[in-house]
Length: 244
Ligand code: ZN
Picture (cartoon, rainbow, N blue to C red):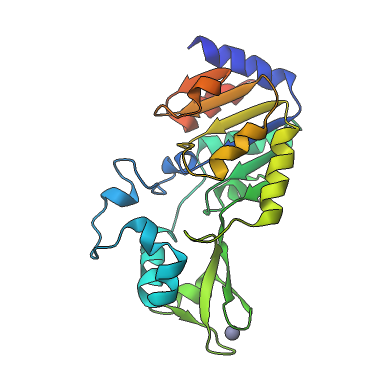
Protein backbone atom coordinates (compact mmCIF):
# COMPACT_ATOMS: atom_id res chain seq x y z
CA UNK A 1 0.00 0.00 0.00
CA UNK A 2 1.41 3.28 -1.14
CA UNK A 3 -0.40 5.25 1.56
CA UNK A 4 1.41 3.42 4.36
CA UNK A 5 4.79 4.89 3.40
CA UNK A 6 3.25 8.35 3.02
CA UNK A 7 1.64 8.21 6.47
CA UNK A 8 4.86 6.86 7.91
CA UNK A 9 6.58 9.98 6.61
CA UNK A 10 3.94 12.20 8.29
CA UNK A 11 4.54 10.39 11.59
CA UNK A 12 8.31 10.73 11.29
CA UNK A 13 8.05 14.46 10.69
CA UNK A 14 5.42 15.34 13.31
CA UNK A 15 5.56 15.92 17.03
CA UNK A 16 1.89 16.81 17.36
CA UNK A 17 -0.08 13.69 16.44
CA UNK A 18 -3.48 13.03 17.99
CA UNK A 19 -5.25 9.68 17.79
CA UNK A 20 -9.01 9.26 17.98
CA UNK A 21 -10.25 5.68 18.19
CA UNK A 22 -13.24 3.46 18.77
CA UNK A 23 -14.22 -0.12 19.36
CA UNK A 24 -12.22 -1.46 16.40
CA UNK A 25 -9.02 -0.59 18.29
CA UNK A 26 -9.79 -3.24 20.91
CA UNK A 27 -11.37 -6.03 18.85
CA UNK A 28 -7.93 -7.59 18.27
CA UNK A 29 -7.68 -7.78 22.09
CA UNK A 30 -10.92 -9.75 22.29
CA UNK A 31 -13.19 -6.91 23.40
CA UNK A 32 -16.50 -7.14 21.51
CA UNK A 33 -17.77 -4.18 19.51
CA UNK A 34 -21.44 -3.74 18.71
CA UNK A 35 -22.06 -4.57 15.09
CA UNK A 36 -19.28 -6.72 13.65
CA UNK A 37 -19.74 -10.49 13.20
CA UNK A 38 -18.49 -11.19 16.73
CA UNK A 39 -20.09 -8.05 18.18
CA UNK A 40 -22.69 -7.80 20.91
CA UNK A 41 -25.56 -7.60 18.42
CA UNK A 42 -24.72 -11.01 17.04
CA UNK A 43 -24.34 -12.74 20.38
CA UNK A 44 -26.88 -14.95 22.02
CA UNK A 45 -28.73 -12.89 24.56
CA UNK A 46 -31.32 -14.48 26.81
CA UNK A 47 -33.54 -11.42 26.76
CA UNK A 48 -35.44 -9.56 24.07
CA UNK A 49 -33.57 -6.33 24.77
CA UNK A 50 -30.98 -4.85 22.40
CA UNK A 51 -27.41 -4.43 23.69
CA UNK A 52 -27.80 -0.67 23.46
CA UNK A 53 -30.92 -0.75 25.61
CA UNK A 54 -29.24 -3.03 28.15
CA UNK A 55 -26.45 -0.46 28.44
CA UNK A 56 -28.81 2.48 28.76
CA UNK A 57 -29.52 4.70 31.74
CA UNK A 58 -33.16 3.66 31.67
CA UNK A 59 -32.32 -0.04 31.82
CA UNK A 60 -29.82 0.52 34.65
CA UNK A 61 -32.46 2.33 36.72
CA UNK A 62 -35.27 -0.14 36.04
CA UNK A 63 -33.32 -3.42 36.01
CA UNK A 64 -30.13 -2.91 38.03
CA UNK A 65 -29.53 -6.66 38.49
CA UNK A 66 -29.88 -7.49 34.80
CA UNK A 67 -27.84 -4.44 33.84
CA UNK A 68 -24.93 -5.47 36.04
CA UNK A 69 -25.09 -9.13 34.99
CA UNK A 70 -24.98 -8.07 31.36
CA UNK A 71 -22.12 -5.62 31.93
CA UNK A 72 -20.11 -8.21 33.88
CA UNK A 73 -20.55 -10.83 31.20
CA UNK A 74 -19.97 -8.65 28.15
CA UNK A 75 -17.87 -5.65 29.20
CA UNK A 76 -15.84 -6.54 32.29
CA UNK A 77 -13.81 -9.21 30.56
CA UNK A 78 -10.97 -10.96 32.37
CA UNK A 79 -7.54 -11.33 30.84
CA UNK A 80 -7.74 -8.84 27.97
CA UNK A 81 -4.38 -7.39 26.91
CA UNK A 82 -3.33 -4.40 24.80
CA UNK A 83 -2.68 -5.22 21.15
CA UNK A 84 -0.17 -3.84 18.64
CA UNK A 85 -2.27 -0.69 18.07
CA UNK A 86 -2.32 0.26 21.77
CA UNK A 87 1.41 -0.43 21.98
CA UNK A 88 2.23 1.58 18.86
CA UNK A 89 0.38 4.62 20.27
CA UNK A 90 2.12 4.31 23.65
CA UNK A 91 5.45 4.20 21.84
CA UNK A 92 4.65 7.35 19.82
CA UNK A 93 3.70 9.19 23.00
CA UNK A 94 6.90 8.12 24.73
CA UNK A 95 8.88 9.39 21.72
CA UNK A 96 7.23 12.79 22.16
CA UNK A 97 5.39 12.54 18.85
CA UNK A 98 1.86 11.88 20.06
CA UNK A 99 0.03 14.43 22.22
CA UNK A 100 -2.93 12.32 23.24
CA UNK A 101 -5.31 9.47 22.63
CA UNK A 102 -9.04 10.14 22.56
CA UNK A 103 -11.01 6.94 22.94
CA UNK A 104 -14.63 5.83 22.91
CA UNK A 105 -13.57 2.58 24.65
CA UNK A 106 -13.98 1.88 28.35
CA UNK A 107 -11.46 -0.98 28.63
CA UNK A 108 -8.37 0.98 29.87
CA UNK A 109 -6.15 -0.88 27.38
CA UNK A 110 -4.40 2.31 26.26
CA UNK A 111 -3.26 2.99 29.83
CA UNK A 112 -2.26 -0.64 30.25
CA UNK A 113 -0.07 -0.32 27.14
CA UNK A 114 1.63 2.71 28.72
CA UNK A 115 -0.26 5.68 27.28
CA UNK A 116 -0.42 8.58 29.75
CA UNK A 117 -2.62 11.20 28.13
CA UNK A 118 -5.87 9.36 27.41
CA UNK A 119 -9.23 11.09 27.08
CA UNK A 120 -11.96 8.55 27.83
CA UNK A 121 -15.07 10.03 26.22
CA UNK A 122 -17.29 7.22 27.50
CA UNK A 123 -15.69 6.79 30.92
CA UNK A 124 -14.05 3.58 32.14
CA UNK A 125 -14.66 0.27 33.87
CA UNK A 126 -11.96 0.78 36.53
CA UNK A 127 -14.01 3.16 38.64
CA UNK A 128 -17.40 2.65 40.31
CA UNK A 129 -19.45 4.80 42.64
CA UNK A 130 -22.56 4.68 44.78
CA UNK A 131 -25.47 6.48 43.14
CA UNK A 132 -26.76 7.54 46.59
CA UNK A 133 -23.75 8.66 48.65
CA UNK A 134 -21.01 8.82 46.01
CA UNK A 135 -18.60 6.42 47.75
CA UNK A 136 -16.01 5.03 45.32
CA UNK A 137 -15.50 1.32 44.64
CA UNK A 138 -13.35 -0.80 42.35
CA UNK A 139 -14.04 -3.63 39.94
CA UNK A 140 -13.22 -6.35 42.49
CA UNK A 141 -15.89 -5.00 44.84
CA UNK A 142 -18.49 -5.03 42.07
CA UNK A 143 -17.53 -8.50 40.88
CA UNK A 144 -17.70 -9.90 44.42
CA UNK A 145 -21.49 -9.39 44.44
CA UNK A 146 -24.10 -11.23 42.40
CA UNK A 147 -26.29 -9.05 40.20
CA UNK A 148 -26.29 -5.39 41.21
CA UNK A 149 -23.57 -4.15 43.52
CA UNK A 150 -24.77 -2.50 46.71
CA UNK A 151 -22.89 0.19 48.65
CA UNK A 152 -21.49 -1.08 51.98
CA UNK A 153 -21.99 2.35 53.55
CA UNK A 154 -25.55 3.31 52.64
CA UNK A 155 -27.10 0.43 50.69
CA UNK A 156 -27.35 2.49 47.50
CA UNK A 157 -26.76 1.00 44.08
CA UNK A 158 -23.21 1.10 42.73
CA UNK A 159 -22.62 1.87 39.06
CA UNK A 160 -19.65 1.94 36.69
CA UNK A 161 -18.18 5.32 35.76
CA UNK A 162 -19.15 4.88 32.12
CA UNK A 163 -21.46 6.97 29.96
CA UNK A 164 -24.63 4.95 29.39
CA UNK A 165 -26.90 5.37 26.41
CA UNK A 166 -29.24 8.25 27.20
CA UNK A 167 -26.58 10.06 29.27
CA UNK A 168 -24.48 13.00 28.09
CA UNK A 169 -20.73 12.96 27.72
CA UNK A 170 -18.53 14.53 30.36
CA UNK A 171 -18.13 18.17 29.29
CA UNK A 172 -14.54 18.46 30.52
CA UNK A 173 -13.46 15.38 28.58
CA UNK A 174 -15.28 16.64 25.52
CA UNK A 175 -13.75 20.11 25.53
CA UNK A 176 -10.28 18.71 26.14
CA UNK A 177 -10.76 16.33 23.19
CA UNK A 178 -11.85 19.28 21.04
CA UNK A 179 -8.77 21.30 21.99
CA UNK A 180 -6.42 18.38 21.23
CA UNK A 181 -8.03 17.80 17.84
CA UNK A 182 -8.27 21.48 16.91
CA UNK A 183 -4.54 22.00 17.52
CA UNK A 184 -3.31 18.69 16.07
CA UNK A 185 -0.84 18.57 13.20
CA UNK A 186 -1.65 14.96 12.23
CA UNK A 187 -5.01 13.43 13.22
CA UNK A 188 -5.29 9.65 13.01
CA UNK A 189 -8.81 8.30 13.30
CA UNK A 190 -9.26 4.56 13.56
CA UNK A 191 -11.42 1.65 14.54
CA UNK A 192 -14.59 3.71 14.66
CA UNK A 193 -17.57 3.66 12.34
CA UNK A 194 -17.85 7.45 12.82
CA UNK A 195 -21.62 7.34 12.88
CA UNK A 196 -22.33 7.97 16.59
CA UNK A 197 -22.60 11.65 17.52
CA UNK A 198 -21.29 13.69 19.23
CA UNK A 199 -18.10 11.66 19.01
CA UNK A 200 -18.28 11.51 15.23
CA UNK A 201 -18.60 15.29 15.01
CA UNK A 202 -15.32 15.76 16.90
CA UNK A 203 -13.18 15.28 13.84
CA UNK A 204 -14.84 18.28 12.21
CA UNK A 205 -12.76 20.38 14.63
CA UNK A 206 -9.59 19.30 12.85
CA UNK A 207 -8.32 22.05 10.57
CA UNK A 208 -5.20 20.44 9.12
CA UNK A 209 -4.54 18.63 5.89
CA UNK A 210 -3.19 15.43 7.41
CA UNK A 211 -6.29 13.48 8.36
CA UNK A 212 -5.55 9.75 8.37
CA UNK A 213 -8.50 7.35 8.54
CA UNK A 214 -7.80 3.68 9.29
CA UNK A 215 -10.70 1.27 9.16
CA UNK A 216 -11.74 -2.21 8.17
CA UNK A 217 -15.00 -1.01 6.59
CA UNK A 218 -15.84 2.22 4.76
CA UNK A 219 -16.97 5.17 6.96
CA UNK A 220 -19.00 8.31 6.14
CA UNK A 221 -15.84 10.38 6.74
CA UNK A 222 -13.67 8.53 4.20
CA UNK A 223 -14.26 11.31 1.70
CA UNK A 224 -12.72 13.81 4.14
CA UNK A 225 -9.61 11.70 4.68
CA UNK A 226 -6.34 12.92 3.24
CA UNK A 227 -4.98 9.42 3.71
CA UNK A 228 -7.17 6.34 3.82
CA UNK A 229 -5.85 3.01 5.04
CA UNK A 230 -8.15 0.02 4.93
CA UNK A 231 -7.56 -3.08 7.01
CA UNK A 232 -6.84 -4.35 10.52
CA UNK A 233 -5.84 -1.33 12.60
CA UNK A 234 -3.56 -3.31 14.93
CA UNK A 235 -1.52 -4.51 11.93
CA UNK A 236 -1.53 -1.11 10.21
CA UNK A 237 -0.48 0.89 13.32
CA UNK A 238 2.26 -1.65 13.99
CA UNK A 239 3.54 -1.17 10.46
CA UNK A 240 3.28 2.63 10.70
CA UNK A 241 5.51 2.94 13.78
CA UNK A 242 8.06 0.32 12.71
CA UNK A 243 11.43 2.01 12.40
CA UNK A 244 10.05 5.49 13.21
ZN1 ZN B 1 -23.60 4.68 49.27
